[in-house]
Amino acid sequence: MKKSFIDSLRREQIDEILYNAMAVVYQFDRQKVRLFGMTYQDSYILYFLRRSSPVRMSSIAQELSVHISTASRAVDKLQRRRLVRRSPDLSDRRNILVELEEEGKKLMMASENHSYEKIRAGMKGYSAQEAAAVIKAAANLSAILGVPPLNADPEAANTDKGVAIKRRR
Image (cartoon, rainbow, N blue to C red; front, top):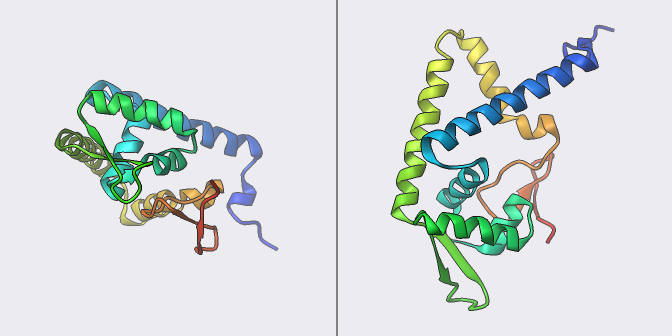
């Protein structure tokens, strides 16, 4: 029986690939900090809000997999920069809703434009087949790494079988 490509890789090779991928993402994050003053967590919260705004603070904590007080401190920082705003949830006054301010939307657009142009420029030398393989791998990264995929619905996550389930609270 013929080995698959992945089975032909040694453990050390896979470890090195993962380390290099993490290092590249970290360096890209550092670049975003320099250019836009946003950490990875800041970016993630703003991306999440752009796709799901307004959301409850608890949904942000859940999305980040952190305690609500940690999410609240992160939102405080973004609020001080006037990138997000908080407001009472009119349907349940115990909850606070968080949404993007206009400055947050502008910053996200600039950040996304930067990422788009970086990826386009970086993929210029790739053949269509190579580019498709990179895009396919990126699109399936959650399955490859065995983590829950992102979902626009903050109250649900997909399992590896693609079935929507409630997230644990």
